[in-house]
Length: 118
Image 1 (tube, rainbow, N blue to C red):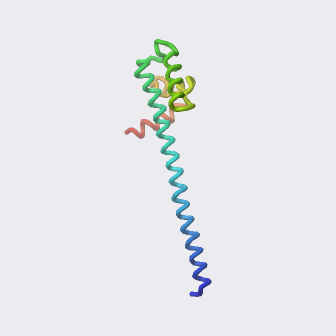
Image 2 (cartoon, rainbow, N blue to C red):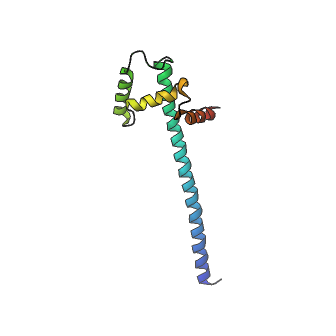
């Protein structure tokens, strides 16, 4: 085999190797992002469920009003950053409350979480 053909084979082999490596890494990144997203969605669902079951004792609203959500919102935002407004917590409560599992936002989420737990 000539020197030129050997170099062309090396380039082709290198190019194919690169494509294979890139495909593996791209797929892994996509899968990792999906896994992290699912874990965070599950965490948010559990937060809503915890508020409903623990603090609201299954009621649609805590007996002591909005103080709880204001306090939790303020503390989570201080400790963990944005994304924990009172409105966000209310959405988590809707998804964590079995009475609201038919909510259009919660049905796919709840079904997926429950399926993973089986």
